[in-house]
Image 1 (spheres, rainbow, N blue to C red):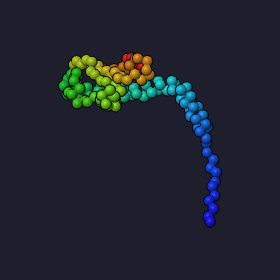
Image 2 (image 1 turned 90 degrees about the vertical axis):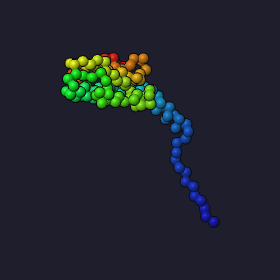
Image 3 (image 1 turned 30 degrees about the vertical axis):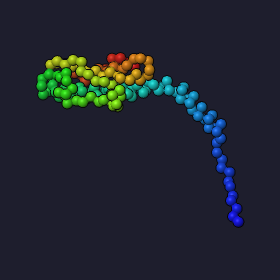
Image 4 (image 1 turned 30 degrees about the horizontal axis):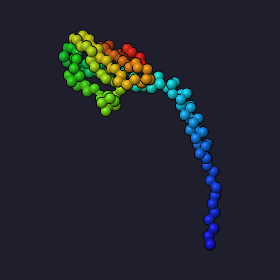
Amino acid sequence: MKRIIRKKVKAFNLQEMLLVLAIIGILLLIALPNFLPLIAQTKAQEAKIQLKTISNMQTQYRYLNSKYSLDFNELNYEAPRTVKSDGTANYAYEILQATESNFKARATAVVDFDGDGVFNVWEIDENGSPKQIIKD
């Protein structure tokens, strides 16, 4: 007859696991407010990149047509779908003004990144440098 030898395996009990999870949760609650500004800055990169793309396309359009355009279709620019319309973009884009010598485009956040009721807004003009108008 074979004898089964059982080894006792060291493991954590339920109370120890719950205590560790509680400590991790408390640390996250303490650290999260410090990371919210970093999250907003990271998401603002989307607006800067898209506005820079719009600026480059406006410059190309101006070289060809001697004026800036108010229409994204004329620029061959397709704005990304926002998170509110099943897309991935956190900003909605629009061209505010366009004349023969200047233009202004705006990116407005559709998501309140830090929950304070203020939505981030960025603008760019013919100089090609995005500027934050309203900080979230």
